[in-house]
Amino acid sequence: MADILYISIDEAVFNVFPAAKIGWITAEVFVRPSGDYVCEMKKNIAKKLNDIGISADTMMLHPDVARWREVYSKMGVKPSKYKSSLESLLRRVFKGDMWSVSNVVDCYDCVSALNLLPMGAHDMDRLCGGLTLRFGREGEKFYPLGAGDSVIDVDNRNIVYADEEKICCWLWNYRDTREASVSEKTSKAVFLIDSAFETEWRSVLQGVEALSKELSAIGCNLLEHGIIDSSNPSVEIG
Image (tube, rainbow, N blue to C red; front, side):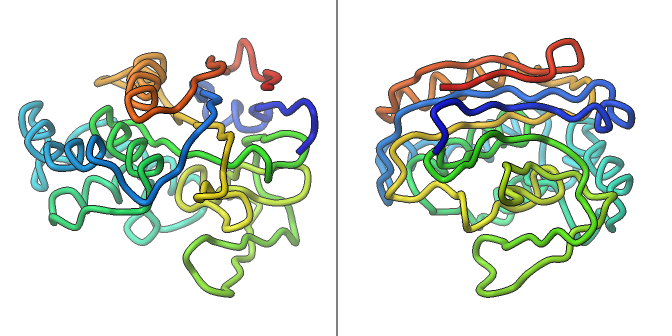
């Protein structure tokens, strides 16, 4: 890992999505297979979503969920096939197909679902230089997590998170790479909260605050946080 990392949004992304924002948090993490606190979080998600009017039947009526389909269409893929991480999470919640990856991953997935904001994380020791949200480039390959040896050819309409060596997340927040994912070996992570448009339920700032609270509750040591947007498109992170 470089001594100084950065997070940035490329100007070309703002040309298509002028309201794009990334909330970010860096933290020392202690990754475990599971944890009682996160197990309780997962138990209550469906009820809490129902309380705000989100169900399997109504989720696609909410603009904070539905508008990601518009974003994915603009990235040149079929949104009915390639769903945002948020839509995928909500569908799993209402099917009762709850995920179990680790205490840290399960925690941010719960916060993502409850705040209707896509969220992700990367192992900072496996990043090279910096992390930029940009359009894909001709000839780039993506090596997805949890897909064996499969390789995806990146289209120049696809928006990706990439460091100086590799694509870390394909289709904005669809899937992470196996080359920078958070695992039990991770000691320091950067968490990302995505927005491509002005949201209605929770702002990116509220997402940062909610995730910070829950990460602290599972024993992570929070270091820095912030938001980047068109007025402040890049930031150094320690």
